[in-house]
Length: 161
Image: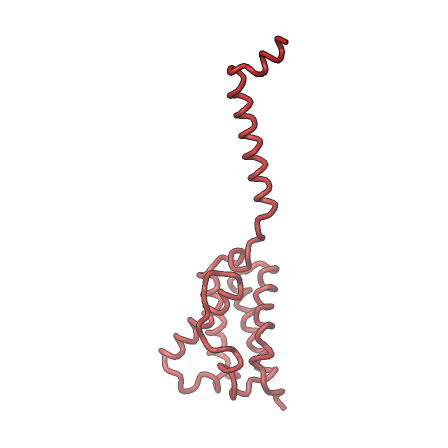
């Protein structure tokens, strides 16, 4: 009987409560960690500024490549700046970031440009080179390049023959 009285006395109530609270807290944190979503590509790649740097790098490479001159002709600085921002927003959104792409659908935006498979491969080469230049990790490079494959069917419209 003394043992029961000792366990149930007010003197031991606080330590039992504290132990139960600590256990509950630890269990709760562990459960959340298990159920936490994996970091998005946006987070793993470094966020908005890194995506903007990648975009600036590959657009710069494309502007310097004579194969892409036909796409840039007659575009004002304002038009190029807007296209750059739309590209950043689209890639940011597709990578799981907080951005919202407000441009036209890819098919409408690229209709009539006659973008060929060779043009597409040239774009991917410039993106890959930009990712290397910025020292993006291999896993993130593959996932970033995969974002483009989701758009290919809406952009490439000619076989180049």
